[in-house]
Image 1 (cartoon, rainbow, N blue to C red):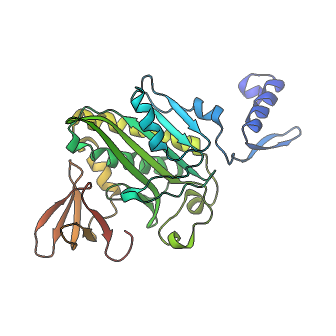
Image 2 (cartoon, rainbow, N blue to C red; image 1 turned 90 degrees about the vertical axis):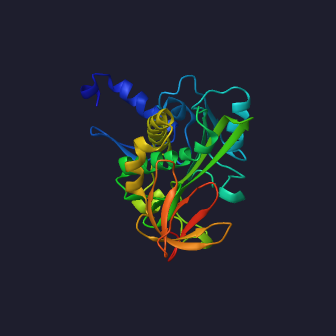
Amino acid sequence: MSDRFNVSRTAVWKAIRSLEEEGYEIEAVRNKGYRLAGVPELMSEKRLFKENLGNWPGAKLCYYEETDSTNNRIDELAGSGAPEGTVAVAEEQTKGKGRRGRVWKSPKGSGLYFSVLLRPEISPHKASMLTLVKALAVAEALRNLYGLEVQIKWPNDVVVNGRKICGILTEMKMEDVYIRHIIVGTGINVNIEVFPEEIRETATSLYLELGHKVDRIELLGEVMRNLEKAYRQVVEAESLLPVLEDYNKYLVNRGRRVRVLDPAGEYEAQALFVNESGELIVETDDKEVKHVYAGEVSVRGVYGYV
């Protein structure tokens, strides 16, 4: 290693020691070198602040060993004038937020829990598109880093092998008729080895799918870079059109029977595709084509979760 990188053996040793201090397990064999034996369980704040999270001018990165919800922390930061792209990351959430008031379980050291502050100059009725953009960013990160066959259950559940691996919650704060800011919270099941019995059939993790633990900080960086790229394209176009083809490729509902949980009355239909506004287009049994809006209804598979 010293010859390859043109540094002294002492410099190599110091670099290895620095990695060990950050929690990496490294095996050393005399006269042969070093081998990475394991990645740290807990996040290294030092590494976290070094990670490239994309080109968000002036954005802050805030790390919490424990907090109630990263969405709450971003809301506070937004009120203090934090710029777009600011990220709050937590090792553990005590009151992680899910859709419709549900709790997102956030065990310490095994998941990636973070929220992003966005300040898009778009109409409020188009804000729901950004939830789909975040789901796409996560799906592409999991495919790029780990080669997984990833799918998206409309609008924003990322699934692998028919089980949920990521949940996303978007909250919008208004001022008069304008968007003040949007908070996109994300929870990814990373190094979870066992799930509670009540969700074991519908949830999975990267550890269970890959058979080994992965680096959560590397994953955060990949998601954020993907998000920045897609977000800027969508906000500029004021539609999902720039990323629509990619999103529909991941859409697990496409061509399947779904149950639409509409407050006006549930019904079954065939899911066709997602349009440039982020609506799921479905066809009912009597051939009526309907536009399903994510902010109003939910969709479930007729024969299971997806």
